[in-house]
Image (cartoon, rainbow, N blue to C red; front, side):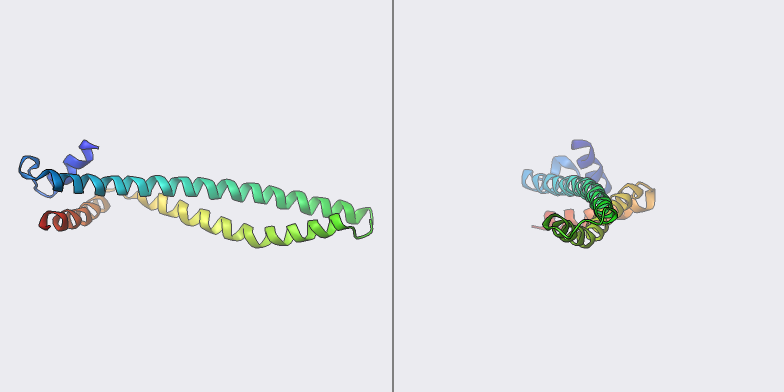
Length: 137
């Protein structure tokens, strides 16, 4: 934590010895918030990818069950009606879950891609503006 804080302070030309404890705490809160956002995004991406895989497996199982029951030309039973309802629900929810997982993955990819120097500089400028706002209070 101090390493990131030191880099932010250096990039903004701030001497840590001259900054009050309240302002240092504000900077630490900014860094914690940024790290928390990153962890939450990682967890959401993982959750939605796992959910999409589980739903896809369930969808395939239900479709296969319906095909087997149709091949046997069984009468329409309550089980088959329930399978049809579950199939409709999965057909509706699966694309939504995949889209959410893809959006979370894109956010993580952009964050990882920001390692190049220009984007790091832009990110530090944004943090610099936030730090200046905190210092002005």
